[in-house]
Length: 458
Image 1: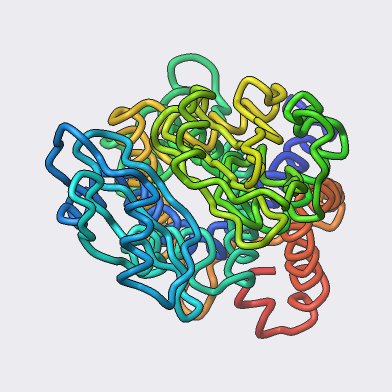
Image 2 (image 1 turned 180 degrees about the vertical axis):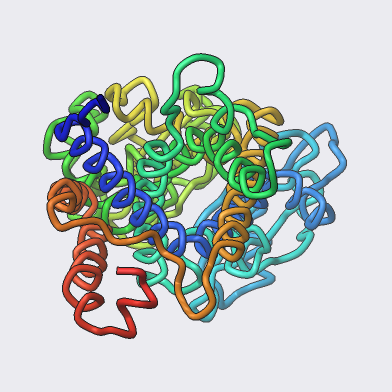
């Protein structure tokens, strides 16, 4: 007699198949939506990793100087800049960080920010560059906000969050379903001799498996800098007492309502640090020479920038945002007395701040030198590769006149997806909003419009 099939087993298989379809459909949507943005972020990120080498080659005449026995004082260099650009306001000074490197004087002129490069030995101006037009700064703007300001920042954040969905669904789809040696075939190792379809599939899935960890790292270390999620996360850590500790303040350190990120480019952990005020206005303002001496006395390594106060109660803000996280410094100095009002360094960071600091320097390719850059660019190339291979895989399977999306699963299976939407919506508001929009469109619009139903395979 023929053995009867267990209906419960059949039902379980059908449920697994429907869940697989559901995950596959969301993976398909995620890939289709963010693929162009992933390529843009990978290309610009890969270029930005080599910022030191690119700028050294492009601006060699501005950067390189011939070392001599004695250097001029910073105040003399600034005076020279003020003489040549009398209508400009001097906003910052960056001492040379090596004997063969020029000093930099930041100025504001006609509403634009410029950097003037000065030979510290001869006090000769080597040139002037508008900050917003420096090549790597433009690349950074594209990478961070697509040259679209706040709107672009939100789009990049949205794409990064959707990439998380791409990773989660991709890992589920590619996770080995079989036992034994066969489980690594098609996941860890591509099957190149199993036919054209499997080869095309594996050339997308296998690299994606290896690259996914690097992509996840880049997303999670980039999000703290985003405008919406990053600001909320920063506020949460500050309110939870994980931000700057009381020990960074020296004395009472009266604070203003201004945050340090509003006046200087500072490390992530110091962005929300309140800027103190200079109260002893009966004294004469310190010279930049004095501030440089204070920095040396406080053991700050070369490579820092001094922001010059623009108001009577302002402070000198010294910011070191160096290649290595351990060397980060944010220091506020009274512009009249030279008192150090706040001194915030890596050792003051809470554990979370230290992790984020390391994550950012690794993300930027500076923490571990050339190997950091090489591994970073390989991940970027891999991201481009899996985006392109996914696109080609879609084209090869796409029916004419249809989108080629996986078939929509039964409504019951979508309960798990709804839970995922709620969770992601709470953690990542932008992706939550777009997920709700896509889900509503997929469940209530597409099935009711025959043309859309055929096109989206609903």
